[in-house]
Image 1: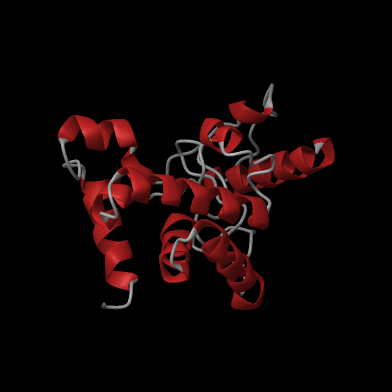
Image 2: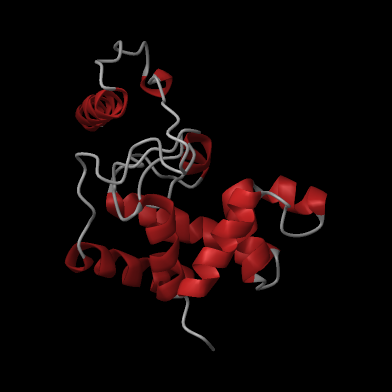
Length: 180
């Protein structure tokens, strides 16, 4: 795992250099990378050095996690697209990582050892979505809101929080799903 972390640290530092145009200082630990806000959901532009996964690689991961967790594959696919643009190295300016943008503490709780490993990340994200769908009795708007803004915020607000990023997130993902 140490080798994997070193590879990810090097990739993130390279991405930070691409975004800022200058070489960032080497961090003291994995979680102290100098994140750079770009004004978008991603800290790394969608044209950063990490290539999106092709359907040939991503679809089997999504199908397996869909069956394992009982979450529709179309929903998982839409979340991956919205969260990371299918880039397994994506890191948000808040520190969420990988295809389904798992926060480090959440990834740990879900048993994800390497959040940049596509299989582990999709499995963890599917597990989290299933938990949220169950918590909100199948209400996808609330489950997606909680995935984006946190269940505490959804519970506190009594519904989809009035946060533009969250309302856009929910609308975008629901718009990608096939009509029932």
